Image 1 (tube, rainbow, N blue to C red):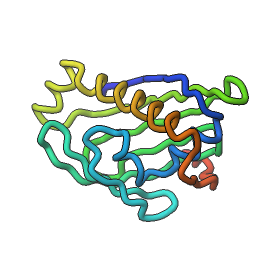
Image 2 (image 1 turned 30 degrees about the horizontal axis):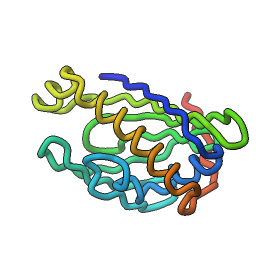
Image 3 (image 1 turned 45 degrees about the vertical axis):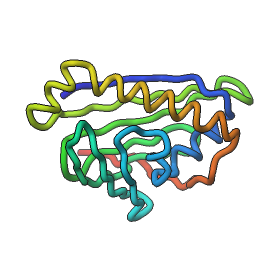
Image 4 (image 1 turned 120 degrees about the vertical axis):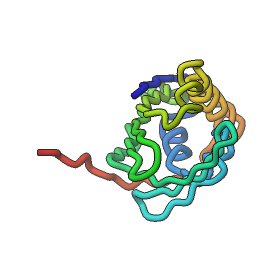
Length: 154
């Protein structure tokens, strides 16, 4: 399993960045290779991606969501991956968005792409495109401020 971490300073208030990030169906506007995300329920999303000519469909489940703080998820089918994005207030008009993702490359092509740094570059590019997208707008297109409490295991 590979772990990717990427942070970026965004020149919008933390609530603006957070609210935009909760609009999963808008991810194709700034995430390369994401064809569509359909929000099935408050906590389940269906993804269609095309990465390196490999088209995949899978579902993810939000495992924790705390407004203006964090969103965590895990795959429920398809390639094994999970992650968390956190939002950090720097001041009234700026924030830092941090992404950590664990990804288990599936198959030879994904393993080679991972070793060559393609996944890491994709994550960095997606974060930069998010920054450009939200800063150009200056406001979110909406948002979901509901909470999903972290489930205790054990």
